[in-house]
Image 1 (tube, one colour):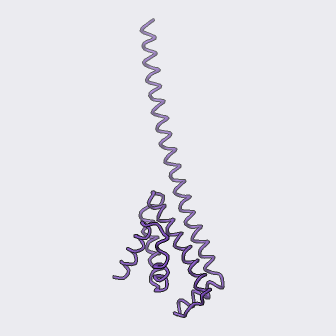
Image 2: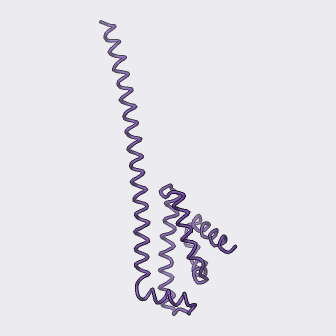
Image 3: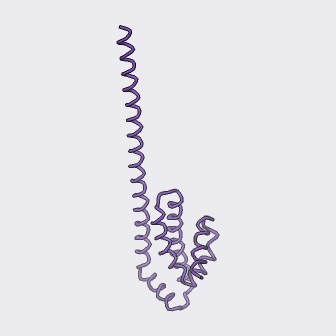
Length: 155
């Protein structure tokens, strides 16, 4: 009888171990899925942010300001203030992308694509002027990224 109990104890112990391993495997799979969902949400938030900024940039008053800047015309104080707010919003969106990249929510390849498109903002002397005025309000690691983009572009 003792033999049977010992045998059952071994079998049940083995089954418990297998159950534990199966539970851990399931948890790992669940964490991977949650990570994929979180990354997808991060990417959707970036897309939503871009769309919102693009829509703001399509407003008649903003288009007028953009055309003036493209033609190197001087902005009024009101236009300058409005555009500075718009530019700041664009930069805050990029700063958020940078943060998401640093915590692993945006893939390195995707971040490189964002940086390439971001680089075009700093081809404008006006944007460089705005950046020099407001850069101290941004996270130091983001400022470093922007400064490197500007430096790379000037070579």
